[in-house]
Amino acid sequence: MRAMTADPAADAAPALELRGVAVVRAGRRILDRVDWTVRAGERWAVLGPNGSGKTTLLRVAGLWLRPTAGSVSVAGERSGHTDIRALRGRIGFTSAALSDSLRADVDALDVVMTGRRAALEAWWHHWSDDDRAAARVELERVGAGHLAGRRFATLSSGERQRVLLARALAGSPALLLLDEPAAGLDLGAREDLLDRLGALTADPSTAPTVLVTHHPEEIPAGFTHALLLRDGRVVGTGPIEEVLDDAPLSACFGLELTVVRQSGRITARRVHAG
Image (cartoon, rainbow, N blue to C red; front, side):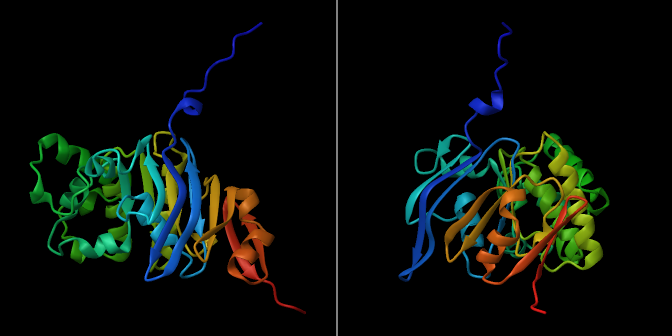
């Protein structure tokens, strides 16, 4: 009888584990008893209407917001039981708020280097030639090597998103969190970014990834799972082909939708009577 081969990924701690997570602000329950597990090799899309709690969920997952109740663990380390700064350094993170927090005159290479320490300013740390070389590698990886010496404030929206993506990758993260990376991009810049995200998705060395978006068409090909939020509650979770289907998506957004899949991409349109 042939011996079974162990799967290392099956024994590894989840990249992210939320149990009973709630966030309450001014008496309003923004997240309500969220249970969610992201495992090795998984790529998750998080969708829901405006105000459903998506960005709050990502801030909790990124350890930038302490939940009112429940527990958050990253790569087997539980928040509140370890050095939060070190644990946060294991998470690659992009968001509009992060972009707005960066100094306008910092250059793109320094932006990427700060990702190696989960910092906002390059002068907070001493950087070696190896740090700079690694930052250049990540810029090249997302097609932005030529932007290294450019000031962040002078970059287009699409160029900024590529630099922020390189920053998220710079620390060899255990978990990658992307908050609406395609928001505000024109069609060309959006498709370029999604192609690059799709290439990262297909790379097995890329950390487990979570992408928040309002629109299914902003999900790159190759994503494996989806989570639907409505009024702070999980209303759908699991394999993407099951969750991003007509009935679950219609229930989440409160209108009748039809879902179309083509070449690994997903679109959703409202069904009009007649």
